[in-house]
Image (tube, rainbow, N blue to C red; front, top):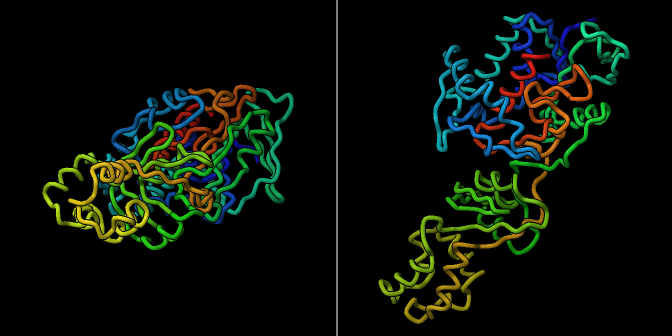
Amino acid sequence: MHYDVIILGAGASGLFCAFTAAQRGRRVLVLERANKVGKKILMSGGGRCNFTNYSIEPNNFISSNCHFCKASLKRYSQWDFLSLVERYDIAFEERQYGQLFCLNSARDILNMLLTECENAGVDIRTNCQVSDVKAVEGAEDEGARFKLSAGKQSFTCQSLVVATGGLSIPTLGGSGDGYLLAEQFGLTLKPRQAGLVPFMFSDAMKGVCERLSGLALPVAVSCNEQQFHADMLFTHRGMSGPAMLQISNYWNPGDALTIDFLPDDDAVEWLLQEKQRSPKSLLRSVLGQRLSKSLTLELQNLLWTERGQTVMAEISDRDLRRVGESLNAFEVKPSATEGYRTAEVTRGGVDTDGLSSKTLEAKTQPGLYFIGEVVDVTGWLGGFNFQWAWSSGYSAGLHA
């Protein structure tokens, strides 16, 4: 069976690319190895799908080439996707930091994509594991450049789009298939690592996190010259929440994280003032004004256990300064992240040096495209990875 375009993967980027190409009159087939399409779309954002962000900038993305994403993001912006959402009368809401979520269900976004595919005549097949892909030697521009085998079926196509996603959340279809195809056709890969993922600990912090499990609070967390102000959540495994997920994109094994528990205050200055205001209070009582009692007790055990029963007036300014500095720059060293099992994205992937930033086509293999998460472009938490899916899918769909 011959198609103009075959797309591997029926996720966000694959479906978007499919109807974009089909609207140009191309005959398009989408092959999905899972039993259902768009699984990651449906689970994202707690089932509400954080589909884009009001503020999309290239510096919201991590890549070995920070300029690569610019062309696609400009060609199909968040405003373009919003126009599509509004055309379908999908109710949405803005949350903090410009994040846009479905008001009802992520299924609204998936249904919109599937309707666009249906209207454009896209053929979608699930439970279809591609076992072999070969380039057809001597194929003319309009002929069959690629031959694919899937079970007992074989297909040919002029353009092949790899939208297989990354290694994250394998239960939802994450796999390394796209990376293997890239290597097969001579493209290089950047090292892959779990991104937007919670941290785990093996030292004393493990017990602290277990005892504080369920507690959330606003912090500023820093690593490798990057900082994020957002909520942090203690879990029985370690630390999660938006702040930790964001900074995980910049963390490498062995790195320390610096947590500011009082991001809006100079803790040293505040404690010295409180010493004058409340000389007979215990330090944990003073900190209880800003932090939860349970966290304050854990910090006391770590930072001033020998002064636990000492009133503020009897604690030296030097000791208060030491505590205050630690509160604004509390260093922890994760043992690892939770890995691909819970990671929202995969950092790294197909090296952008081997792709056209305008079309997402492989420079050395005409007709072969890579889009979405499989590419070495990773967005922040907050709708950025979906926008990359829409933008890269659109760019490839215009040319495949």
